Amino acid sequence: MAAATRRHDPDRRRRITEAAVRVIRERGISALSHRAAAAAADVPLGSTTYHFAGLDDLLLAALREVNDGWLARFRAWSDSVDPDRPPAEEITRFVAGSLAAERSRTELEYELYFAGLRNPVVRPVAAGCLDEMVALLRRHVPDEHTARAVIALLDGLMLQYLLTGRPFRPEEVRDGLARLLSGSPSGGLPHSGTGSPPPAAAG
Amino acid sequence: MAAATRRHDPDRRRRITEAAVRVIRERGISALSHRAAAAAADVPLGSTTYHFAGLDDLLLAALREVNDGWLARFRAWSDSVDPDRPPAEEITRFVAGSLAAERSRTELEYELYFAGLRNPVVRPVAAGCLDEMVALLRRHVPDEHTARAVIALLDGLMLQYLLTGRPFRPEEVRDGLARLLSGSPSGGLPHSGTGSPPPAAAG
DNA sequence: ACATCATATGTACAAGCGTACACAACGATG
DNA sequence: CATCGTTGTGTACGCTTGTACATATGATGT
Image (cartoon, rainbow over the protein chains, first blue to last red):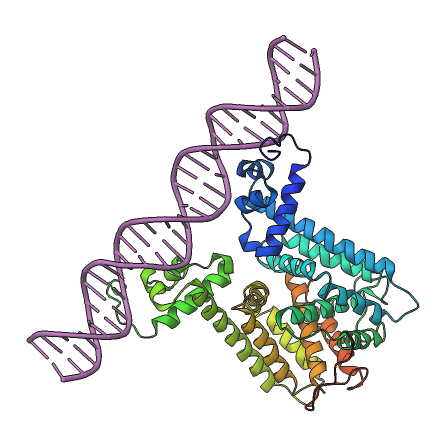
């Protein structure tokens, strides 16, 4: 069989990484093991331990892959935003996609977030993802502070939709975003635009 | 020694549960095992398998304990709210506590959320927690829709604070909340007050 | 052609796991 | 006091895991 003599196949590392992502998607991070990834990639066990220094290494590679996919989709959305339509509506469009066609990708991304809470090698990936999203969103909202709030609202809402089975209501999301975006740009907070940070406000 | 002859100790089940919470707090859900809980509770292994039908049972009991503690704190906050002060400020007070003195409790609660995403026996606990928080918050905001948005913003912001090491800025939280609460109560959404739900809006 | 080296593979091992189960100790009931 | 059922305890079994390692293979440079 082809599988038996598959030797010297180029970028096997990548194939194992993608198999690891598949394992996580289907059975969760806790089910990721050298053996599970090897089986999913149809390679022998020794192959995974050769290409990855340890299990953490494999997990990190897989979560980076997940993150890249998520950010690519967000970037694509950002490029497709129509500046003539209300931002709240455009952002709602992204949320709708995240909960429907791209739901499994979304579940993966939140799995990454939670892993980051515990695992110090994963945390920078999750934190970097947040920063990158803020930077991209920054183009469609008045300031960074607002961008962070919007991301927070999105994360919280998607978490609610994923946890409770509550049906997705676009108006709900749109309305919340509209309120968040309606405030005066530098209303109560010295917004950290492109200048220097404020001199520390209140404890 | 006392430990050797400790027999017939009342509510041993509870002590094991609390030990399990301690294990989760210190080493994460993935580190919870019958043996780890037994060691933390200073009881023999057989004791945990006697009091809990399976590992899922132990995990569920521990996460319920976590959830009870979290909700008790939120309830205490809700009761202590000064109606004469701006709600945004009072809610910010809760967030501040969650990230400082009660931070480890907060980390536990989010661990519960993430477990709920994957584990179907945990999900109802997490979902119920969200509903309970909405119900409690309902007393301080105009409608349920707003309450859900506020909870979402809080969850998203706390997640950001926990993941990135960004220092906590009360004004940031307060300002976002103020914007969310400033909108017209029934602005763009038929709010699901105490009446009947709207006849389904959009796909 | 030959040597060299990165890559590929199968196997082995120690550790940790959930769970089952036989037995010991105790409180309650008669 | 005898009996019984609940509670507590120690141990053992089968399984999965991460990792190490000896070996095999094919590409590469000379």
